[in-house]
Amino acid sequence: MRNTIIIFGVLYLWIAFRLSYNEAIEFKFTNAICESYNESWFIIHKCRLKAVNRTVNTMNVNGTILHPAYRIGVQLQMFKRANGYKPWLFNIHLDACRFIKTQYNPFAKIVFGLFKEFSNINHSCPYVGHQIVEGFYLRPKSLPHAIPSGNYLLSMTWYFDNRPQFITKLYFIYMEDL
Ligand SMILES: *[C@@H]1O[C@H](CO)[C@@H](O)[C@H](O)[C@H]1NC(C)=O
Ligand SMILES: *[C@@H]1O[C@H](CO)[C@@H](O)[C@H](O)[C@H]1NC(C)=O
Ligand SMILES: *[C@@H]1O[C@H](CO)[C@@H](O)[C@H](O)[C@H]1NC(C)=O
Ligand SMILES: *[C@@H]1O[C@H](CO)[C@@H](O)[C@H](O)[C@H]1NC(C)=O
Picture 1: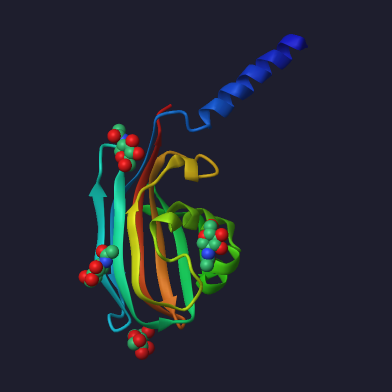
Picture 2: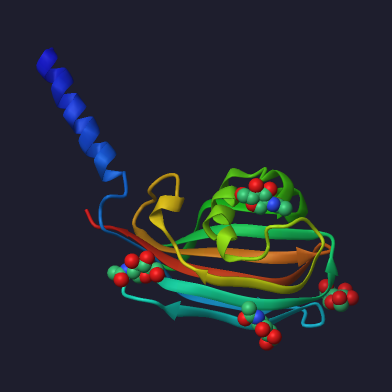
């Protein structure tokens, strides 16, 4: 009985260790695509990845909202690659003005937590002028859980006044070196 407990204890510790991000992990952007659907409201000046070193690619976005946006929505969808990109884990529509105040959705909270410190978008509505994401890179420590190894796409379609204005697509790889 005692030995069984010890064996399970060791097994538990081993699994906890495996999940604790001490492993060499690849977690980085592989591509970024931004597209405006309405250049009389949102202009994209820059949407680019920059290779910093072997493990880090930063994402850099610079866009301008030409008129104040008071009603902002975002469709946030994850895909995982398996013979093409298949929907994975979540597909949610958020009221961005409500979210920025209350962080009411747990998935969006994780996504926002990954990049808010690299951007100037942490303020309440309305939004107007330069929108910047600079030097944004992915860190495994910002995720509450490990995710399965693979290639992913996070697609965000941004709505002003209930109409799609632009889309940002972030492709990334997550690889655990088991
Ligand atoms: C495009 O932007 C203009 C200027 O802000 C706005 O008046 C118009 O309604 C927008 N069109 C669509 C389809 O959202
Ligand atoms: C890569 O760049 C990041 C961000 O500047 C840095 O934290 C990390 O230590 C670098 N890794 C290597 C292997 O140089
Ligand atoms: C963003 O782009 C605009 C227009 O090209 C430029 O004036 C501004 O300096 C850029 N801002 C940053 C932080 O890159
Ligand atoms: C900006 O982020 C900080 C830290 O997460 C948060 O406490 C604060 O309420 C945010 N500010 C706004 C205006 O959303």
